[in-house]
Image 1 (cartoon, rainbow, N blue to C red):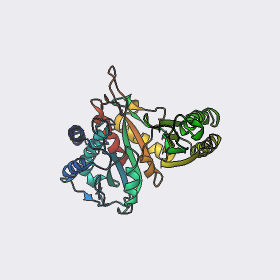
Image 2 (cartoon, one colour; image 1 turned 180 degrees about the horizontal axis):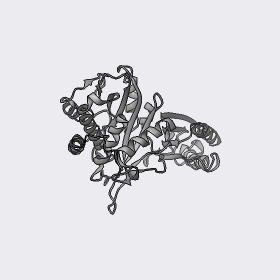
Image 3 (cartoon, rainbow, N blue to C red; image 1 turned 90 degrees about the vertical axis):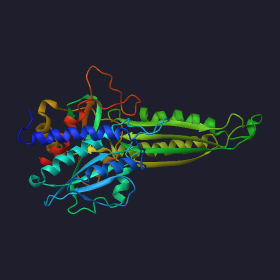
Image 4 (tube, rainbow, N blue to C red; image 1 turned 45 degrees about the horizontal axis):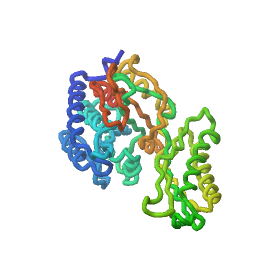
Length: 380
């Protein structure tokens, strides 16, 4: 059962209704990473009515607001605001409009109970979660340094279509993966197709390397530790030109375990170098670390579970297997204690397409759980 004393029910009802309205309105103005101009303007207009201090971190998109309740500690809440780029233009295929709507609902509630809060609250409307770049950018612009007192903990939420509306996942330990992206250029020698002996064919080398990469997961990692090392593109040549000079392979590495991640990176470098040598080519290898794993540490788990149970009732608090998808919320967690919830957005007996699917949608009733969960993280 929920803790009836935790919330002002009429105020919470208002907050949920506002969150739904804002989410629907934001759905109509999808914008891709770092181009969320209309979205940012909408959010600025929406928060103007509340007693919030806007924190200028000198970024073109995104918004940071501070609710000063006169306390000596600050809790941060984060919502992402960008849409998924598609061939038809950006679309909200990951539910970030719903997350931003949830935050606006939380602002309505928490500002309405300012005098009773135990903490100040920092509200972070983050751009560019798609591509996992926005959190790092905000921190590099002094996000935490510009707030006094700076946040001592941070909470975030994300919808999950595989979980039914009304439930929330509270998971201890790694929830989403550490991610690196790799870009390998195989350098050969071009020649006319009639004289293959004059060429050093990078296509043959690249094809062999793609096969070799498969052995990293099958032979170089503990089978009880989840990991991916995936090639997602290979490109070379032109139908109207003979043997090309270069081939390019791109992909990503995802793990929950940092040491394993480093092992896979090192093995990838070795395979690329040695395979290139075997085919008389050379390899230029670029591996970029994007984000660490989202890791819900034990000291945050107990608080988060207590908050979720008070908000929704223990019968609606569940657990789930983690996902090898990645989330740049993890970047905040590398600096301060953090917790990330999955809030159910799937409706039983309906098709619930996954994130980034063209049929994706956030199920009806999502905000009735999302707003109380986010708010309770501040109240407990």
